[in-house]
Image (cartoon, rainbow, N blue to C red; front, side, top):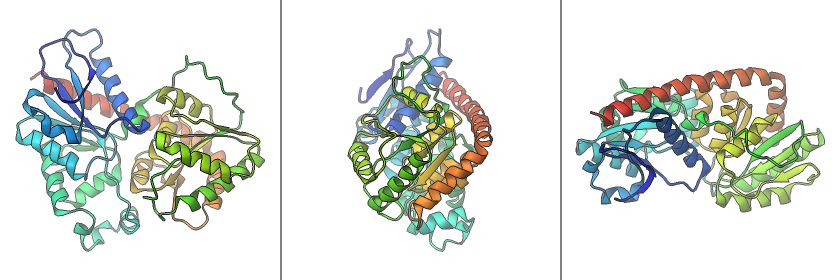
Length: 376
């Protein structure tokens, strides 16, 4: 069978297809890990559990889709991407049940983001400019026919509404990465300061607001120099192998490296969450480090390089912690947010853990629906 067997069952049930972009990025791994942990908990001690195959979009056409009981569109930013929606559509046309597991919509157009965040999206004159006719058709069809649709955040939900999608089975589930827990038993051998900031950096190959990662790195380096002067230890880390060269370029920009640790490999999520849990705050370029920070109740500053960063931040009601990467003085914005977090840290700790608990219940609902569906 095409795909990777990621969960071995013990029965004659048809298997589940988990549709994703692969596991090169720690964020994609986290969404899959959360899915498998939920299923493992549900089927603990049971002799009736399905095989689960991870399938990439380009493998989908090689499947005999009717061999599967269910297709799950995995977490990440897979909605409004035509080739993933096409896979869901084909499954639905073949009579196979489908579920959307906390996926979201991403976009890099600054004007569309401005309008949506300001509540002006209804006034966008030509939505076709941002979403093709094909994507609109596939979204409307797949969302209406899916068994349940858990989406990442309120802005994804708003876009579905603007595109006239049927919303009766749609709800905000949050990003499933927020469900993960740190590994408290792991031997973490870095010497950590009491005042420590975890910093994620990497690259999106300039597919960011402002289209200038070099300028952004220079501003970030200046802010990290200043924060070390204030007594903070800085730990910089990647979530993707391709991020590592960008991290070394960032370090080269820094003047002050007296209280700096560079992690030059992608850590397992449970180990990374433990380090973040020890931090005063985190500063993050990529999305999932913000999600990991929220998972352990640590306030984060999001260098919001694409629309998806705002989508998640609003799902936990902290959009004020986002700094869009095309603003004029990013260094000042970062230092202002650090001061703001210092004055309001406990507020965010309590808020994030409340949202984590609420999202956990939403994913329990999704898992129970999946279990009922595959046993029909």
